Length: 416
Image 1: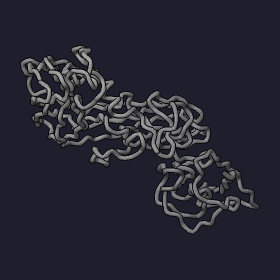
Image 2: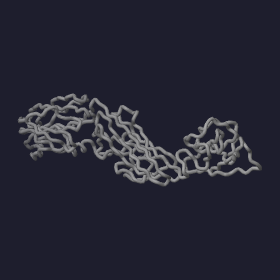
Image 3: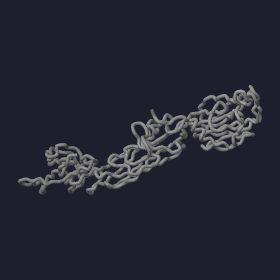
Image 4: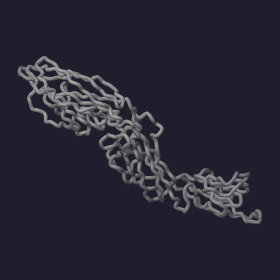
């Protein structure tokens, strides 16, 4: 079972409420005592479209034994909602969460067993999505304090809209043994903002550290990620992290940058890590209907310590043009096809041209025989730091081809 990242929704909402007028301290009536005891009906659930006005009434009933006078009614809204107009008799301010609120004097006395009605009216903003409205009074009729009960209620709303969480990657180049800085970005392209008060499925960014590198500096908002959840506090050295906003809110159009410092391993080759816009549990958020931009990459271009870069390998260079692990001279292959061995006598159609990961593109191989008898594994060098060491093949004589002396280079690999 997942451990929630935040307290229960009611407790969080209560902590976020800012009351402009202090609550009165009139005691609630207990059994055998005279006093008011107000309760309020519930609002119907709705999914307003952005720009749409929600306008409903609630009933305030006095179940106590004394009249409730000067009843104060509060409406508090999340930041994706607002009031379409200001009403006379109401004082407007903001909650601690930054949303609008109104404290309204109903100018009514509610006698025992009597009821009055009042309106709850608000509008969904263009960025509305996961929202809430808090409404009510206290049992005595004073302005409500923290917490929710039958006199002070809270309604969660999901607006008829979506959000588009997307990942943005980065790239850097560095030497083996050096460090690079990469920034993983989570962005909400809108139109809706995300402030999930009802679930712990908060927006997040999964970051997979590129293979062959180690995270040596990690943002404080990023925790190591286990099988399906964060596993502990932020610390370096883990292969995967999940990052999320400290206040667990991401506004429409907002970008959240998470910068990592990575140390490149001495045997590393060009490498890539994946980042994914998701929830903090690695799941896709239901409000995000566009999956096409959920994934991006952190690319590290590693400079070869032997003086070449990318897919080239040391020990395979001759005149004519590099082919990434072998070379061509005048159209004939000499020194290896970039496949871990070499071929002789094969005719080519052109010289050089870098090829990824040591694969020759200089021409089509002929019927040359493999000169890598000691290299039975074949294939390109693994990206773990294996190196090629050229040896001159000894022979009783040298072959003269087109007036030139061709030496067959045998490239030996260490076992990985």
